[in-house]
Structure formats: C-alpha cells, structure tokens
Amino acid sequence: MPINKQLGKTGLHQKHIPIAFCLYVVSRVEGFSMNHITYAGKNADDVFVTTLDNVARKIDEKFEESVPMKFGEEERKLNEVLNKCYACGKRFDHDDFKLRKVRDHCHFTGKFRGALHSKCNLKLKRTKTIPVLFHNLKGYDSHLFVKRLADTEGDFVVIRRTRRNI
Image 1 (cartoon, rainbow, N blue to C red):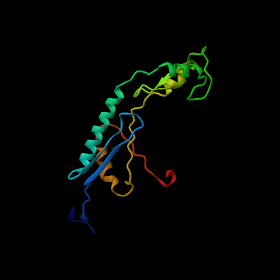
Image 2: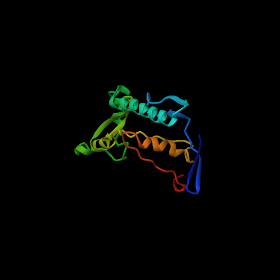
Image 3: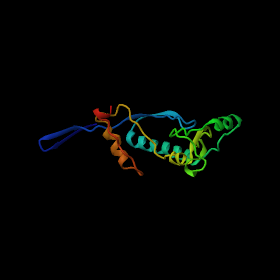
Image 4: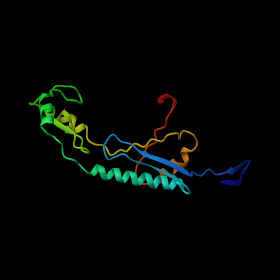
C-alpha cells in the first residue's frame, strides 16, 4: 500500500500488507490431516492466525479422545515373543516394577505398537505441542505473520533457521 511519510532524513514509501496464505495440516496419525486451506483477501494476517487457532483447537479436541488398544490374537502372539523394550532395547525384568513388560499403543488409533518397560512407557506420553512449519518465509515477509501471532493467546516459540542448522 503506498504511503508517503517522512521520518527525519528517511522516507517511507509503502507499507507491506499480507494478502494471501495457504495452510496444510499433515500428520502420520489418521484423522489429523486436513484438506489445505487457502485464502486471498483483506486482513490475511488476521485470517491466518484465526484459521491456525481453529485448526489447533480441532487438534486439541483430538488429543482429548483416547482410543482403547486393539489387542487381538495376532498382537497377543507378537507381545508374547517380544523380550526387549522397543524404546531402549534392554531386556524386561518382571521382578523390577520399572522394568516389567507393558503393552504400548497409539492413543489416537488404538494400534498396538509393541512392548515397553513400564518406565519407558511413562516417558513416551503424548505431548500437546503442535509444531507449525512455515515454508518460504525466510525473507522479510515473516514479520507480517509472526507479529500477529505474538498477539495471540498461548505460548509459541520461534526457532530460527540459520546456516548452522540447515
């Protein structure tokens, strides 16, 4: 948007306003992926943040659901022969409560994942962190959305991409 404003010896000639975005929700967990959302129009930064918040709320609702373990004859046979924790690779010890064998499953799908130590199972609890990755936002445009995100409720952390972590 053109503006003509003089700030001392420097002049501002235009204000950059976001006008579009496209959002994809991708997950390995069934039911979490969503169709892409595109928007082009006024207040794209506000619409983006509102849309992102709505998506986060839908995901949060999914986190509240817990599907019981699907543990049939095939899973029972597999569990019987497993003698090492799939998280740490160490053998089970039924005399030690922390090292005894327990069955692990995905709380979103109910799928049996394998046998774990009791202590390893507790360490693998679900996180409510929702990573949001921006593609092609390394230029100056990032501030247009990040500033708006800073005004929202909740916590977020920006992890900057540098030459060291490319």
